[in-house]
Length: 299
Image 1: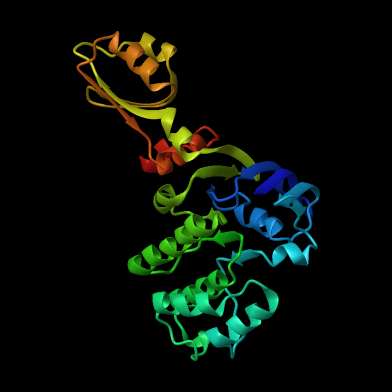
Image 2: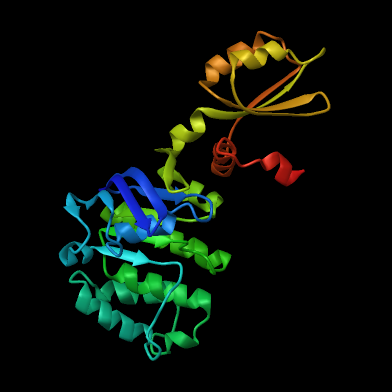
């Protein structure tokens, strides 16, 4: 379990994280999303014990992370920007990790060698960016970590390898109950793998919910009426956005599905289509409430 409690992190006069609190349950996959500069990578580096906090606490399985090498032996972190020693091969890197992680498994290393299909005697520097990302997963997963922290994990991978990597991650969750936190801009892929999602905005938590709950109380509603649109209907609904195209009105609503339909159908619409939002749409409309004018951007 990962507990992030009232975390604050400053760089000089810049507040990168402001009173951030999140809970990642053991054996779950948590997606961390947000616009560029929202604090995702800073939070991850705090979680990995790279940065000292200015305030608050971070616990992994009840222990503080910062300056705790024993706990870090159970955490695998794959950053967006990778670095490898210039002369290292995948086998050299695996040998290094074996010295750092007591749970490192050569058996798992050889199993994953078949998944990635890379030459482990070739210098990593000679691999493409996507192949280097595969090496990072190959070696990190061989450490049998209890917690996996990923920053843009499949960036640079082709579609086939992306699927394989997600398969490896979810296998770890299913078979060993590993806890995973993923930061990514690819919301479509997160929607397929995450149990919970948190949205960061300007160093603060905008929203943190189970993915199912997040999508179950926010809807897209298409409406059309025989006569003019009943403006008084808007006063009875929690409307996040309202646009129209001819006679068809598009509303983004928050509320309970049955009650929404009951309220709308009382006005006898010709068209009434209530659709759950995708994670990407939830993200866009939540940010829309924080000053992002998407109508002007898309006009």
